[in-house]
Length: 514
Image 1 (tube, one colour):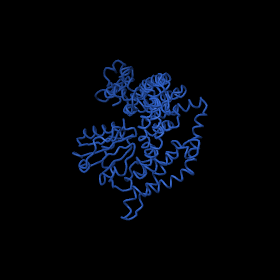
Image 2: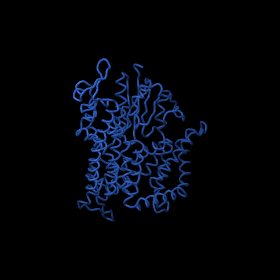
Image 3: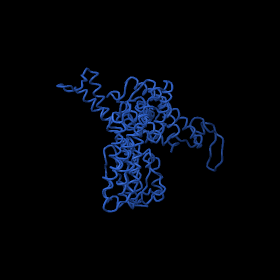
Image 4: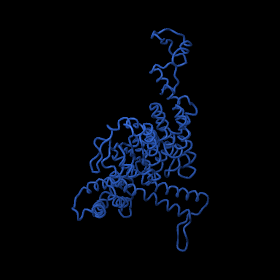
């Protein structure tokens, strides 16, 4: 399989970590095998290294590692190619399997509504929900930063005055109001892009308008809006409705008007009426019941819930369990419930920071490559993403995941017990300094305790795991282990511990892992 040409596309919900880590892994693996490779990244910086028509035409295989899906329009460019598609969260783990079995993993893609053979689907409900989250993030981040800046100005004595006749509004009031618009729009944007992920462009406008309607109590005549529950239900409903509607064939005369005229009009008419009279009030009641339940939970149960959410966030580092917990906390921001997302601000930075610190304290437990990666893991982990901890977990899954999950749960419980709030996604450990996490003292207490425990657990659990691996694999240690050795003719002879250490084959923890 020499001289193969590989192209790929990677994306993930946040567009920060997995997108680029997987792209780099694909490039490194392909180059190590002597293949020509080009990988397009669809990350936070937009589309980079975009594949040209010539790149795609010349490619023998296409690798799509997707975390937020890909529209049918975008995927159509790979029509007729051998395509390997998998979730981006699994790509790092399966990179060797993919390249060792390119022909078996690939399926011929045709630009139709038929899924690729028996491939593992990446367009499930969670991927659509995360596409909505990805679109809503800039609204919340920008709005949250403006509100944090406005609040800081007020704390330092600036006026917070609304405009009146003949009087301009104060700057702090303007910042808080404009920032609040980001939170107002995050739910309609989320609903719109959930639908867009499923039904493509014709679903976008109807889903945005209907979700906005469901979250406008003044129009619905309800006490509150439908919140993120409404965005999920409306986004999925409109998305799948439009996906089915697009299969309609109206003949040459009217077919061209289906996408930009007929589908948006019919969808908005149908779902607008259903939402106004039925779905909107029902979802608003359900959202109010959920918020009432969360506010009425006894303190001890909230702490237990904090442990559960923290453990979920730390368990699979960007996988489905992590995303579920993160989505739950993030989605409550529009309802001004910040404590559950406060847990995410504390816990998500722990695994990469703990792994890095553990390599500095006990370097013998880690390979040379893991030690060299410690500073990038520390810097990226403390500011933007949990994913730098993934390579450490892949090398020793049992001790690392156990340490991360246990420490994450404890940190989550402490965060909830101290009432840590996070207004929006930000800069990790620097969130309190820019006003996105509060109170600052509570945040740093939860972070410090969680980090110390995580490092301790990593060292203790991985040390025990390595010793168990040594015994299991029959590796002889220098510390009074076996007292017999095999000589050249295969005969087993007795030896003292010192003699054994001199004549037997010994291996370090690094060699043991290899």
